[in-house]
Image (cartoon, rainbow, N blue to C red; front, side, top):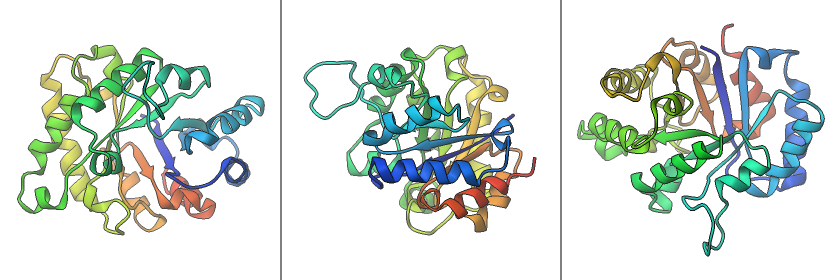
Length: 254
């Protein structure tokens, strides 16, 4: 299965800075590396059109994702951006249920599920994030919590559509803290999810990519990304540094 590396730029860079970073990254990549690894960038909403225009015009193989999508299709929802609006911009992916949105904006499993439905209905690949707090891990309650998150996120989704989704394990305690789940931790969680979900009628584990996110860096990327269980990474702060991001991409043994 083809590995995928997603750079989540979070609330950083205006559209001019985003263009510069896209161009710098493109120049820094080895020729045709995107044929073997999917590379996705998730800038702020204000930069989506600028980056997608460059990708389309220059026929770049780098793909663009939104950092979020509305649970609503249209209407009086000030500040929201709908899946249909993203689709018109030719955006191919959307991060959904990131731990920062779950913890800072009280995003529930039900809201995540609505966003997943809207994305799939508009031919946008959802990147569904799930993970546990430090308290749940310390109390050894994290696996049931995670499995419930995954099940809730795909409720009502047809099997053939679930197989297009990317699932990102990102433990809350590892986001922006410098703490990193060990490869063993990540494998334990992803293996548990893969063992649980095949019993459901909507899932084929051989067709879905499961990735890791949480303080991914050049230091830990090689071990994480060359596991057979882990299909890629959701990279935060390191994706804003071209040298570090390229090192993470190159750490995958092709």
